[in-house]
Amino acid sequence: MIIPNDILFPHIREEIRAGHSVRIQTKGNSMLPLIRPGTDEIELSPLDKRSLQKGNIVLARSEDGRYLVHRIEKVKAEVVFLRGDGNASARETCTVNNFFAQLTGIFRKGKKIEKNSFQWKFAQYGWPSSPLLRRICLGVFRRLHCLHQRIKSN
Image (tube, rainbow, N blue to C red; front, side):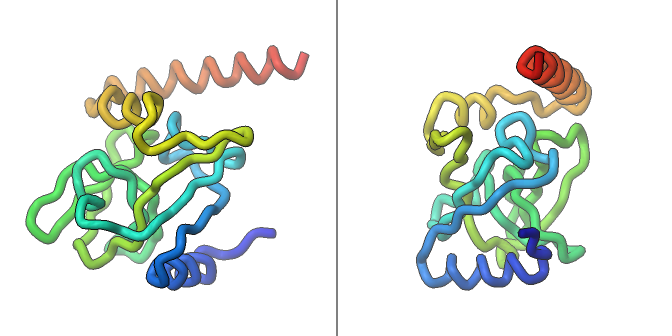
């Protein structure tokens, strides 16, 4: 069942405010290669005092009203700059009041990728910030993924 974001995310906000973690299916390519759409589920948990730091992945509502699960690129006073790992150059901004949850786990093929795992840390610190390098790395990732899918289907 597909639930529209304007119904789903207010419910998620209430669960998070009550202190619960929520696990949801992903969609969209903006966090590739760490988070894969359609196959991965993400765990969203309440914010803590360290949540709004560079490198963390958070759930926020952008200034134009969209809900985003993106990585924090920079925090400047009350404004936070976000960018999805799969976005070469597009960035969003939010105020500190527009954050609702932090990402604490990714579920793929029955296994949990923990927030402090090697794979997570590599995406956080090893993924390029340069738009050109990101575009190249994403192109290589997508080609390898397509090749893997073709091999798997034969």
